[in-house]
Length: 291
Image (cartoon, rainbow, N blue to C red; front, top):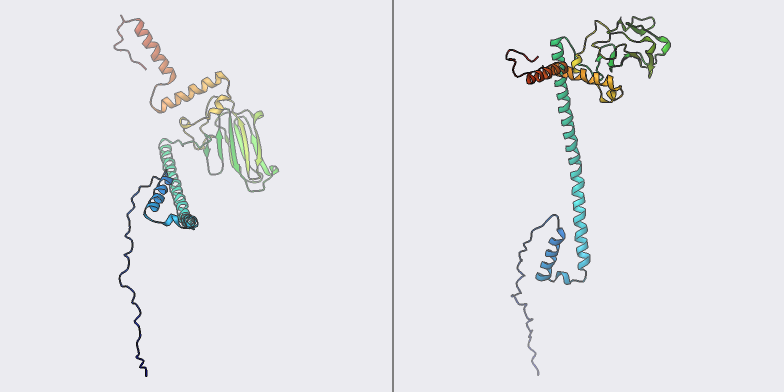
């Protein structure tokens, strides 16, 4: 009789000892923003030396996926930053605009204060003046007057009378907007008026004396400081040589007077006196004054 004893072989237990994980290897490299490819070459050289990553079958696809994700992150970051940059630019533009506006206001206030103290006003950009009911500009040859009228006004409703020394402008049946003696005479035959955009009456007056600036349109109105008039160079080029020379001389004298310096005539006299003194050294000029 056989005796069977219960016996169970013990299964081998897994070994508690395992191979230690690889230690991290430090990587040192500097990035030159102008040559990022050189940095990538160092990265791949390092990977080839310290790991088997580049030996994997699908390594190209993995690298491509990494690059694609990086590009998407960069694009998303740019999209988030772009509105902020645009907003910052807009704010800077507004600030510059406000600073420029304040500077212009200060200059305008300064000109107004200077004009008030001297009784004269600074001219507008057209070398004339902007008044409550009308404005005017000028060149040496002409004066242009602009009188606002109700929108839709037709020429038959306008009353405009231009005489050699007098101007009267307004709407029929109403008190005239301008009615006074002109600052200087004009050539009535070379003067005319028209309706501009059915909103204003434009009047062109041809000066009789085309060598002087007007201080006002009509006598009794506020006057401008003609020393602050700034004629356009393009207008000077239209003049004949003799007239242009006279105008440039007048402009030079105005600037000299404004700075408290001698005019062209005074400078000429000084040169003559200096020349005379050099030619006559035997004479005593100790008491002579250069005007």
